[in-house]
Image (cartoon, rainbow, N blue to C red):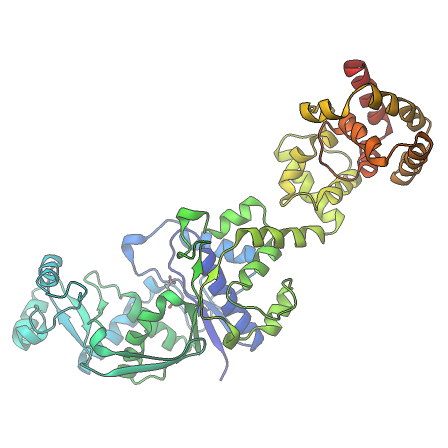
Length: 483
Ligand code: GLU
């Protein structure tokens, strides 16, 4: 049987990082098994609709490179792929369940339900009490029909049998078993004519021939209800795999309160797609013990649902930053250069020629997490006005350092080719003849040319600033701070 999996988000306005992990695992599984990946939009909760939410979600999936074979806009043989466009399908199946006695009409108001709950002695028991409430069993067939004909508001509920074990196999968690006494008579069809998540999800997974349901652990408590529905319809259940929760550092469930959870925020901050996807892929799964960096093809090749962990995965932003640096340092200089050019113009800095910009980006790539940090981090590369760090000045500018660099500046001014190697060679010679350590020489140079204690290699920096600008900076500095 051809593998068919789906990512079934509710359009909440953005793609949650946990949603991306689910989408990605579905995608990896589909690609690994030559199957189909489906995107289905679960928009049956009309109270939570957000404008353009589906488009935003699709944008984020596209950015992450999670492709789908069927879904809104791309189509497919099992559409429509948006639940609000499938209402007739759900109505048909609800009618079937009512007919077979597995679902029933209920006419209770919200207030009546609240009163029922309050009257319970066990405050944890929020289950609908079918025997006392206003439904087709307590009202009888005739009264029920009368209410329906009269246009009364109703919902359709699942008739959960008493005291039976519902069992299913989870590919990650193994055997799961729940007693029906712990399952509520779930609403299947709401009074607005829309199905609830449970009904729509099961009907769609079945009618879309989904073979594996791979979703977050938060849906595990819903699965017994789904299994009941599959049984009542006489359908074979798909295979289930519930992915571990994503956690904050303090092991609480990952939440907006402790930082960003929207994929688009990470994208906008400047994380590289491949780094971010690599990081997300390892939330709950370690492909091999020996490394952390994987190309998407390797992830597809190695993916194995049975190797996914049960325990929650900490969303460790320090690890994400590390991952980003690994990818950044491997980018070709030209790519980095183009990225830096965009940043320079965004931030109002002057661009150098593209070769120099690429070389600067390449030089600084290991000192930043985002390319967007380079313009300010290395502002002296782009602008001739830069500030001098007072502490650094106090530490490295005095009569002795002045007397040390002045003759060296003279040597530099005679250099024909102002390249890293030439500058390094004459500076090393000078270090020997003057009997000073390189460090002692480099600090005042760095102070004069960049104004701050940290940066990239000094000779590379000098080559990229260029001889003329370096000489000008030496002159200006000495006339300003000359001792
Ligand atoms: N609509 C659910 C969500 O928003 C889908 C859960 C499932 O995959 O069954 O995550």
